[in-house]
Amino acid sequence: MRPTPAIPPRPLSLDGMVRAVEIVRERLERTTAALEQARIQYVVLGGHAVAAWVASVDPAAVRTTPTVDVLLRREDIVSASEALEPAGLHVEQTESGLALRDAVITSSPRTGRVIIAGELVRPDNVVPAPDVTESVRLDGLPVPTFEALLRMKLTAFRNVDRMHLRDLMDVELLDTAWVSRLPPILGTRLQAVLDDPKG
Image (tube, rainbow, N blue to C red; front, top):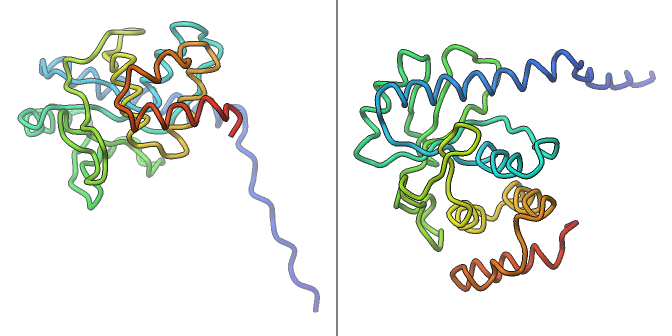
């Protein structure tokens, strides 16, 4: 008896791809609007922060991201959680930290994270997350200063972080001049990425 051939996954249609991007954008807008209305100081992190910096040079080079990550001070976590609830967003404690969950649009399991300002994101990190004051507004969003963003990406140094660093290199925001401006261990990591731009 012949084995049943595997059915290839159905490719995402153009409409589906556009909607996927819209879902994340809507979630970002609900998150930021709720925090702004409550007058809670926050910073947008992750792929959205990288996209804002890339867009400041070349909007066509922006990469989409599936999650919404925000930086908050520990003393603002409770008030931020209360502000986000009416927008259908819940801050939950998980084994890996604080997660941001969406009760309105539940189709995507990857919603986002809440990072606590001035604290280590993981116990093995070499530098803590920046404070919310280390931020600038780009495209209407408060995002980390370029140096603070580099520190976060080089501290986490996952595959996605290295990809984001290469995105910044591609639009010529990031070069060897930054190596000596960072803590030595982060400068070494940055040099490794600069030496292998296609890796």
